Length: 258
Image (cartoon, rainbow, N blue to C red; front, side, top):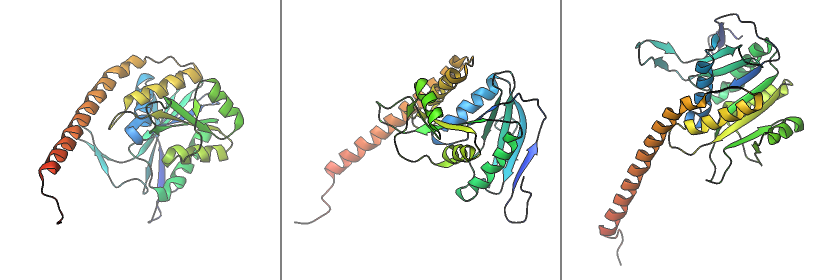
């Protein structure tokens, strides 16, 4: 990994050694639209009691210190990699506090790939969000080879038809494909303001289907209900503000002369 050189750096600290059965699958769930990937990754980590095996620090992360809500202890923003060895295939989960800045995203994510390839990982799944109309798919996907795309369609993943995929979802999946990994992205339909655990649940269902994982997804239901209630409050408040502005506009003098 790149050591500090006075200007920019990316540093990976190994936290634990684990025996990973290859080929392993990497699942990227970094913060992004609706925190969809982040919530899904956090669920997998908690559900399988994953082991933290690496931390990544970089000058390309935001200059932020995260303060724990329970302990009040602070720590520098970072990414983390967790190992899950109780599933078949074994899983490596990439998550963290933030995505790298655009100028350094390729450097940071290439270092992540260097590390996971040490464990003979052969598949990369990148999770993110997608804004679509109400009739849009619950889960959409994209990949880098015809065989993977056919496999996704077989599992009822609606393939993207054009457009752009920004951030780590696009960049990491593309870099992984360049390194000859089976690589694809899964995007959950964003329907709520703020965080959207509904979309995270849809992604987890699809991953469970793809790899025959046994997940108790009902554990997300309370989080989903809280997010829906928050979304309703935001929508109601926005409607009230709009109606107030419209009423005030009707009573106001015209801003012009005849």
